[in-house]
Every structure is written in structure tokens, then in C-alpha cells.
Image 1: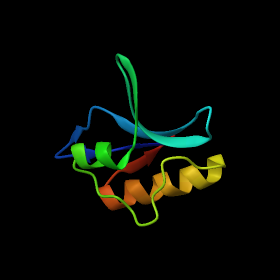
Image 2 (image 1 turned 60 degrees about the vertical axis):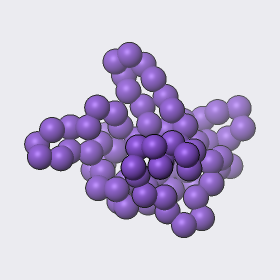
Image 3 (image 1 turned 180 degrees about the vertical axis):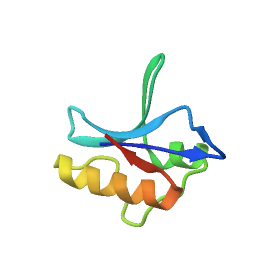
Length: 83
């Protein structure tokens, strides 16, 4: 599941996605060119001027829980789901 942001007909350079890590599942800002992933820490969310949902955690035990939080982040910040 990926989320993109389109503003004034222009797609934001990156997208939001969930990836598995050693510790569990995390939400990331990703960019395929060049391949980059930045974990959505509260500090990074603030740096990108993105709103932070209540009860946000960095690491989730299941992919479903991380994707649910990613959907909340996307909705709060005007991102659209793509497949």
C-alpha cells in the first residue's frame, strides 16, 4: 500500500509506505529515484511539515497495525492511496 500527495496537479516527490524492519513494521517516506527510505519518526514528520496522529508509534508488531497508522497519517495530510 502506497500513498502519494498531489497538490495543484503536481505529485509530491516521495510516497508513504510500510516496510518490515528487524524490530517490526514501520512507516516510511520513500523515493525510488534514487532509492531512499526515511523512517517516519516524529522529528521527520515535523521536518516535512506533516501532521502526527494521536497514539503514533515508530514500530508496530504487525503489518496491519502499521498500515492502519499509515492510513491515518495519509488522511491527516491529504495523501491519496495508490496500488
